[in-house]
Length: 131
Image (cartoon, rainbow, N blue to C red):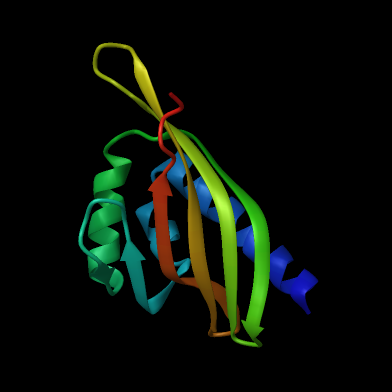
C-alpha cells in the first residue's frame, strides 16, 4: 500500500511543479483538500481554499523558475493519511538580471479526499546558508 501511496504523491508533486512552471493557480489549488492549512515561512497560518489561492497567486507573481520537489520519505499513517518529508528548490529572477535560489525542506500531511491524495497540511522552510 505504501508503494501506491508514494506513487500517487510523486505524481501529485509532478503536477504541482508543472502548475508552478505554467503559473496555473487553479491546478495548484486542485491539489489541496478543501480544508487544507498552509504554513509558509515567516507568515501566519493560512486555512481554506481562498487563503491558499491568494498565497499562491502572490507567489506566482515572482515568476518562479526551476521548481523542484524531491521526496525523501513517505510514511502512511492510516489508509487516508500519509506524511511526506522532502527537499525543494526554486529560483526567482530579480529585476537586475540576477536571480536568487531558495533551497529547503518540507513536510506535507497528505489526506485522501474524493478518492485522491491531496495536500492537507503543507509546511516548508529554507535551509540556513552555508557559512
